[in-house]
Length: 462
Image (cartoon, rainbow, N blue to C red; front, side, top):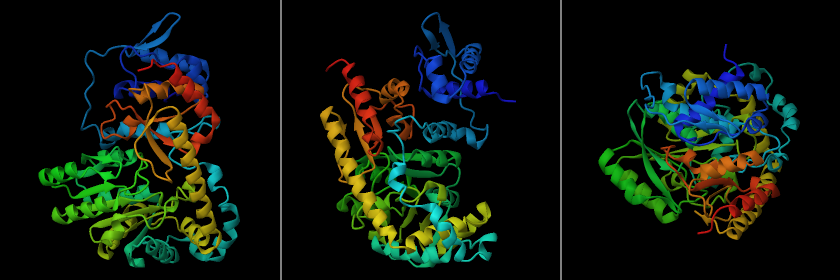
């Protein structure tokens, strides 16, 4: 039976193996780890003793525990099971999904709960039941709840994307949508283009599938076109996973000119573009989307309600050509039988009420104000900001005097400031990065500005 101490030791060992802690680094103190995880100090001591027995760390009297140099690093076993290829991403997801009520999660991927609280999910249950109680005890359609797909046709039209209900497949959030696209298109060893930095859960899914990721550098106005074309010419990949707007983690938006050029390259090199747009409700509808310019000819559009309604609902969708949508619906049925019709009915009820548009207006206003204040804070400490957009849940920034953002993240963790260092979002998570992703909503907590200024003052000038 695995004990809590075993699990903690395994977590720390993975951090050491991935380079999060290097030879000579001091591990967090007993008190820090006990407070962070809610463990008894004896449990943390037992975990440290396990690491000592494995030859990973050594105790130094009065100073703590330090990482030892590993003379013969253990090679990754490629045939140890497909999950092994993605374990570094799995660990990162575990860390990002932890909830610490008293922490300031400036690295969080979601808007503040108070921004979504006016979507009173509890009041919708009676209305959902009235939409068809009998159907709620059976599996739904392989495409998903038909009235919601009708709503999505109108929602996509607001973005300039023409689609019919038969072109839309509802899923368990955007992540399942990406998963079924990968399962359908990407064989083991298949070459796939991705944004770098980019959405790290996608990297984990591609590793799990045994795909070969080809990194396309993300610039402030979209993908690096020179690198993109070189990779298309040399490698002939089939898919490019990208985010045109509110890019995660950089917060950048693609420019119209670059969007047109990306689609020209897709046509020239027979490329299929998978456009993930999870923050669509936070951005003006008129901004350029690849799927709107292309009308789902060489694009697959993925959307979600997790960021604007509730992640607990787990409702997302894929919009694409009708024949492909039918195939993806069949694949979804094989994997999950159906998505949650109860959740889909709930979203449909929300969309049917006039409150929905007022909620989106409040979201966008809150985001605009939070973005303005976040940029002011970064300017006051002379941070380098990657892209400046009027409304962006994420700001990608490099702080002065910080060569490795992971070092700063460790430094701020005992102060209950949880950051998202840049290496998390790289196709190679061992690469040192001075960048971090910041959530503008979480940055409003005054504890963050205070802790940040204190940490930067302690760094040598120049």
